[in-house]
Image 1 (spheres, rainbow, N blue to C red):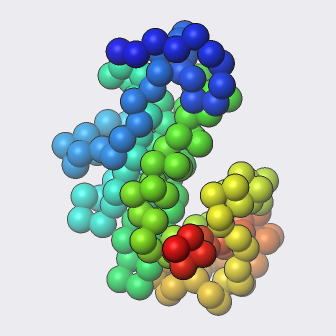
Image 2: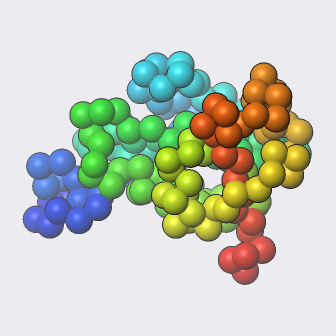
Length: 161
């Protein structure tokens, strides 16, 4: 395991540099365990690509790209409380975007994180601009996403060609 003496974003915990990579489907149960504290999110091998940051065998941050019939949705970006503030979410979002950069990526961002996702090229769009498969997750909000603190966003692949 590589050692790091700096304290920049993602430099690791106690000097250990995290390994950031896409999870194998056999590792999805490990992601599901971490996501229990994040709305009981689960990975589905048929539709999901999951990216994680590992400190040794410990999974410390996650991000998911879910394939819908009509678009790709980024969600499940989560770092457990004990590992926050170390840049791990940045690392997994970077890995996801690098791997999925050929596709338009949609997401629902909580309002206070739109600036964070803006650093990766995501920008706010109207609810109507979301593909139906992505939009159906929040149909209960009936056009009131702002009222529930959620902002639809997109990162278009053509902006980065």
